[in-house]
Length: 175
Image (tube, rainbow, N blue to C red; front, top):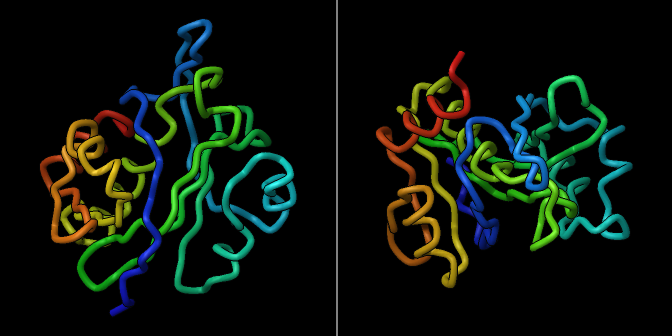
């Protein structure tokens, strides 16, 4: 079993949508989640406003790293997630919205919820009944309880159970 990482996640779930939604126009856009590639990493850097070293995540063979893009617009990455497949659940190592999807002037909402739903979908696919865990920053634990219905599981470890995972997957991945 992979040991749990101590990185505390600090993504914010701004809105649970059934895709991602443009904040200005209110238009919804269908998304596609696919593997992050070495070519993609070139546009993801701290100088471009990203907080984390995604090349390091991609280089770690124990992790799976994915990007979310808008259908028919695969070159603009809206957000990223990395997770580890453990013996009985998916552990979210890192999740980050694109810099233009943060703060008051963000362009799209719903990105983080979409990525969490994807982790739940992978958990179902792996036979883990949707169970996903992650370590939260203390100040955001209540936020995850309210927005994701995540359950505190000791210390800062949080868990998403089958019922919540089903709701998230149904919301974002109707097909």
